[in-house]
Image (tube, rainbow, N blue to C red; front, side, top):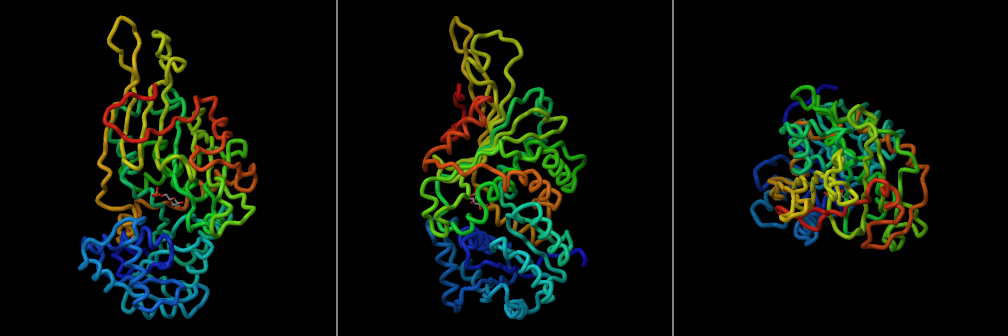
Length: 475
Ligand code: BG6
């Protein structure tokens, strides 16, 4: 097994008829083709027995779907996309599918295989690529979740490593391709004012919220095998936490960055059942593909600790869920109050202490909240946010960025095996041993028990509905 450095000369999309391909991958491929960034053959693989007209229609309808990213605004680019595409229909357990794929790949020497398929099929497909002789000089891009727990992640890793060298394995986490999340890294280490306060002496607690105002929709069957903790917390939100909590990388290299991030996850205390609240929205059990007695969580709230010199004793609160009041991803870093009580309103009893707020979605921005005196005789003030707005319009969607990087062999924005294993090690104790998923009403912020988890640290701070330029803070 040798390291592949050249540009991939074909892209194979397993899961061509799936939800992820329709919603995110076709728009990304269309954008890449439109910009001239993708000019190599694309082979779709799925079990649907489609003729050419049918899969062409599927790609078109996916791009035109009002709920999906994109649309078609350049018919020449769309026709170019179709002309690069080919489709192989077959069962992933069937050797003949891989023989047909080999034929479809023609002269390609260094294809990239992207696995946008149910996680239970990753190992089967990877092994079949190996036995069909398709893995030589190729790359594999594996969707999340990488495993279901520590043991299965190790097993999947072993299978993957038996077929591909680590340098050809791209474990994708699309959150790492988001501008606002890359900006956490930049903001932390491109500024010098942050570092002196970015530690247990000045930070009281951190809250991370990933809220979605919709349910599982057509993904009920997938969700039944995952749940919220596996779906977005142990991957997307742990990556966000790693960027917020990491030590400065020792030198300028993405290897140093990977080491620093994995060290945060290794220092995280294994999650105890008492530090996890699971919830399930009312109505989930009647969604398509969901068991009528399902205990899968569609919401979870966690209290985490990072037992490092920098973070000892600082609680990290995380909540994520579906059918919450609005779709927003936000981090709030709560600073300690001033040590001396000089003004009546300068301590939490009279208002909230200063904080940093990283708005990651829908409109990115970073805010620093500080108190200023109100005009008048009294020494009382208001906490106001100094707001650094970001243009949310990234040049590239996360999948466009990440698929392009993987095809170019650039591993900077992918997760390495250490980080994946460390993340599973943290959640492992609570995966099987946990309380029942508690019901909550769609449109609420989850079960009441989630509030009890954080009551000692001032409660959840509700993410602001929008991102104004300079606004009064919460108090
Ligand atoms: C995916 C999860 O990985 O991330 C989904 O499977 C979730 O359940 C999605 O909705 C959130 O991603 P984004 O980019 O829409 O915030």
